Length: 115
Image (cartoon, rainbow, N blue to C red; front, side, top):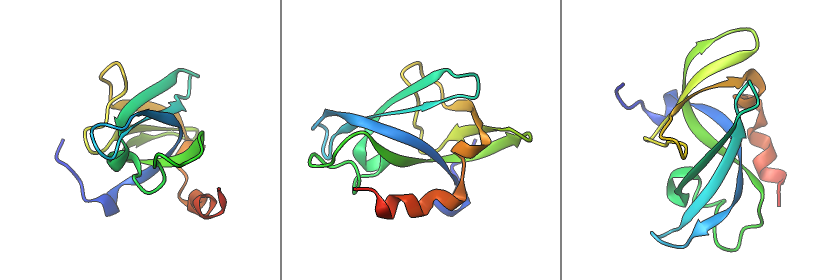
């Protein structure tokens, strides 16, 4: 699938659980979210790809982050999504079925109030 402009991507809410490494710069963070069936998805990715400004060495974890995704299909309860920027979980997967509340455009305000 061709790469999409960031403005065409949706926010997939996840939790950065901590930094795994300081190399390569600016470091690697572990991120988790759950699929609709309860399966935990674990991603280890460069902080710059996840959110370099929120995933610094001085940041307190766990903390909310937004992964960019494409919505491939939707039902009344779920979205089938594909993570953008070639992000994959520890099993090499980039497509997931998540609860519709995990892809929520209205939650951006939470980032401003979190410490």
